[in-house]
Image: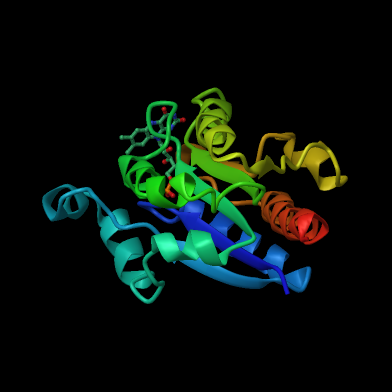
Length: 197
Ligand SMILES: Cc1cc2nc3c(=O)[nH]c(=O)nc-3n(C[C@H](O)[C@H](O)[C@H](O)COP(=O)(O)O)c2cc1C
């Protein structure tokens, strides 16, 4: 059994939708999955200013918070963050920064990893966010699993770096974007199974 942790940050739910699809895809490959949200660092006052953020927070309160032990448990992880000024959220980065002990013990080496994001504009920085995440995984010695164009649906969504959703002007996530996310989860689980000793 391959263990896959899908660890995400999401304010208004767009990244969460991708995270769910990625977890479904990993499960379809026979993996055991953990869907985990990272601890939110934004203040309650900041969250309260955005009704969509408040609603999403309440709707996903049942999702367990990510713990560093999830990284040790996982054979593969898939990280997701909204694009914030072309980069990841402080909340996800804070979680990642706590992995130093596992990193020091060599417990992250050779695990499969992939990443996903959502932004509000086409050129608003989805690739820069994904590449920023991948920088961490070079340090960890992980095996980065990009979707590439390894499935026909990637020709439709067109992001070989990782699943992404452009939520411009209230757009809803398309079936193709969800299919690309499912594919990314499945592919990451399958590559992790191939890497198993
Ligand atoms: C502080 C902040 C910074 C943002 N920066 C960008 C950005 O650089 N480029 C972009 O296209 N969208 C940006 N956005 C929009 C979010 O990336 C977008 O709404 C995303 O879909 C939110 O994902 P979520 O629903 O999972 O929180 C920003 C939003 C916030 C709140």
